[in-house]
Amino acid sequence: MDSLAGEAEAGQRLKAQALRDFQPVPEEMREDPRPGYELRLSPEDTPVPALLKYALKLIGLPSDGPGEKVAWWVDFLYQGEWCQLAHRKFGVRLTLATEASKDDAAKKMGRIVKQLRSSLSVVEKLIEDAAPDLLGAGNATVVNQHSSLRDAYEYFRERALNPAVIADKTTVIEHEGGATGTSFESGAIRMHMNAFHDMVAAITAYFSLVEHVLVLALPFSGFDPANDNLTTIIGWRWGEKFGRLLGTDGDASKYRQRLTEVVERWRNPYSHGGFEKGQGATVYLHTPGVEAAVPIGLTKVANSPLFSLLPTNETDVAEVFDLFDEIDTWLKTTMPRAMQWIDSGLNVRFDETFRSEVGAARTDEEFEYLLERADDHQSMLDNMDF
Image (cartoon, rainbow, N blue to C red; front, side):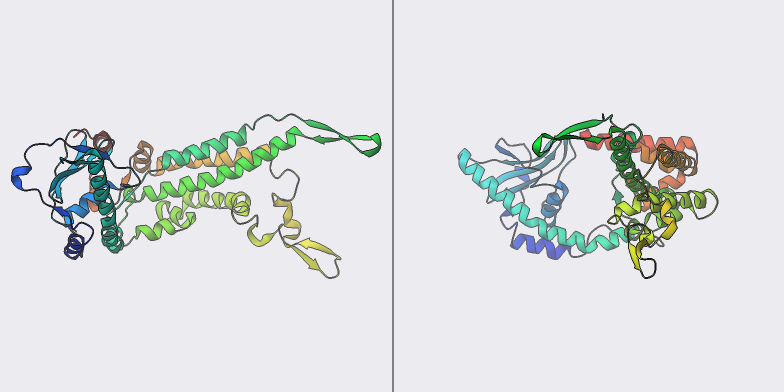
């Protein structure tokens, strides 16, 4: 797909409305850079700079570039005066060559920016209409958030394993009439509860990390837009993603079952309003004859975190994190190339070209070269070292 449907109509609409004052620069005026007033556009005005370039392209204003520390620039006339919009390393810059005063130039540049912003609604509508087809063909890149998601998991894990020391607290209470009493708060119990809360947070963070990894690994695991819909897969629950990437037999079945047990015991009750699966210890039945309210889970409540004052112990915490370590190691051996790419921090493309490159890298050395080349290219883009 070289262009989006409706580009011609969108260009005519922009020429007649938002960008009506923008005109091409005559060839004889395009030779030399011109001094003028410069305005650095805020990130709020240009959250996606390429959309501004695209809007100008739609009305027939070509872009140049890349160049040294600049990704692209577009020369144009605004109400007869030469201007340039450029995406430089530290942001988007607008230059206006005019003999007007500084204040008048600032007002005119403000109007230019306002009109450029107005053009974005037309551009965005084009892309939104095309998005389902683009995603359906795999023409998309997923941002690699592996590092930040793992940092969140490691943060809560460390706190769960090594809670901050809290001393016992004894408070003297004075009553009317001069009598006194004391209240005692156990530092050990408070540390234990803090560790439990951090363990639940770490479990939630780990499952978020695993789901993210399973999506990023798709292009390395036979993703085919003819059969797979990226948006649909992203919306699947973690277990469905797990089965799609890793299968349903052998070690995959074993690890999925063990993860499910962790989810149902520790994560779900605190991700769904404090209610366990089946509401075992969170809802009590008013039962005739028993003359008491009894938990729905009956004697099975003994396995619930809500059953005792201290919902977990050091063995529970260690077992959960040992399982996660085991799964991390297994993932690296089960899909080594996907994990190598994910660990690099590089974003993951889903288009046919990238999938073909991954498939063509038959040896470890070829894959290393592909990864190194992608990393070098990303560094060039980040630093605009064209």
